[in-house]
Image (cartoon, rainbow, N blue to C red; front, side, top):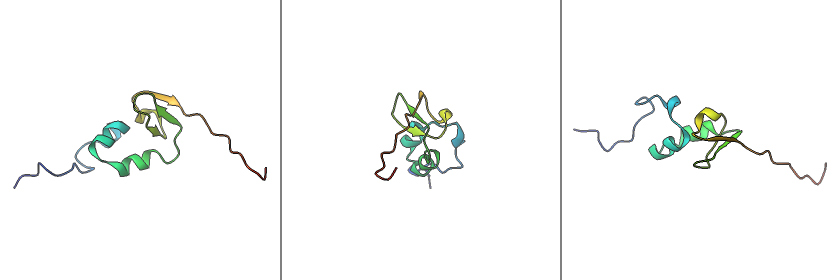
Length: 72
C-alpha cells in the first residue's frame, strides 16, 4: 500500500526550518498555534503573527495595543 494521501507527520521534516505560511500550506495548525502564543512580529507578506521573527519570511514589529480600562 502507498502512503501518498497521508498528511506529513511532524517527524517527516524539520519543522523548525519552516515558516508560518509553509506550515499553513501543510495543514500543521497545531505548530502554528505553538509559535504564535504571544506574537511579537507580523509578516509583511502573508500577515501571519509569530513569537519570533525567524518564523516569518518578512517580519515586522507588531504594534502593541494599549488597553483601555474603565478602572485604571
